Length: 271
Image (cartoon, rainbow, N blue to C red; front, top):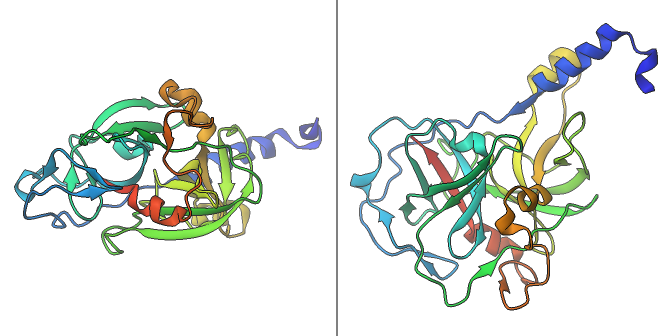
């Protein structure tokens, strides 16, 4: 075994360091004043919200943090991280036009995943995201809402590649990507250049802690949960990597994956 020549204290320290530097993003509070002064039907992918939230309906409690979410089906199912919604008394999703109140449909502590649902007017045809496994070298798009207190409320795009197909020690459900990730990106969708959802952003190496323990500053060492685990964890999505058949595909084959990713991404506000 590789560990036979490594002193046990060094090996134990290595495991401790891994968990310390594998820092889940602490999503920072955004501006609670960024509300909407009226109720109107808003459009997302030509889909109508049933119940937008007016400024007067925004929770009066403090904003604990923010994250991101990405739509999986056009009838209102979104994927995000469990840690984004944990400890929230109220949740709101925003696309820059209107806010809506989601319900938590399901969540996984093991894989830090959660599924949210919002009310939408019934689409003429239910369409879905195509969930595919990441491949080494895939060019990727990430769109989310980092540092929403000071950066654009309309979201933020980063690009990169899939640089490793696992997350290292004890993390086979993760893959590594080079697209820059900041606090608030948690729950963002990761698309390949074919417009297929290959993962959900979850974490990054904490630069300061890595430097303290290993004497080096990591560059673009970021992680996402593979879409394979979305399918196996939430069985309603298990066939979303297969040909669509009678159910239209949401992203696959799109001539402009970026536009679809932007329109299908939302800010998550935790109160």
